[in-house]
Length: 165
Image 1 (cartoon, helix red, strand yellow):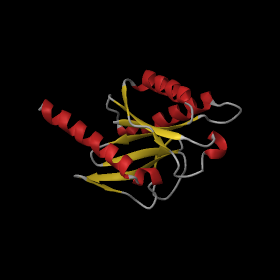
Image 2: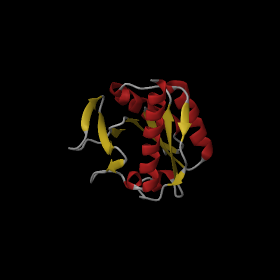
Image 3: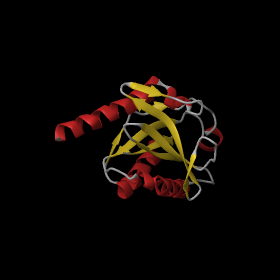
Image 4: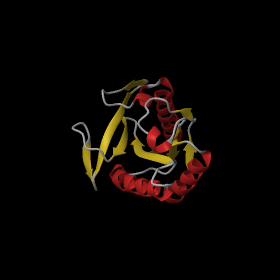
């Protein structure tokens, strides 16, 4: 499943970004918005009091499409710039029963090169009802809220798959 983490301050930019993402990737589900107070990394560019929400697309996506999804979301971010600053940050990734992987433009030893200057960054691994994090897992992905959100998605997806059999 294609997942996009949306970091934003103003709901209008969130809504516009989601609308354009839906035109590209189809219908999606929205997760719960939560305050993004885990780092001040984005504050200079985006301001204080940021929020984050995950959106998950209904249509399955091939893992090989992650690099092109990141190129698309980077271009979308650029199209929103106001005075050179991004009012929205879009982080695509994919969710499988095994892992949550995000696309990144930052090269690190623990990231896999997937082409076009994009790297695959495994931030969570799943086994039954447990979630494994890593030293490089982002702080918000370590929270119970985010871990439980993705476990819930997996259970829902697995239940739908099982009921179709």
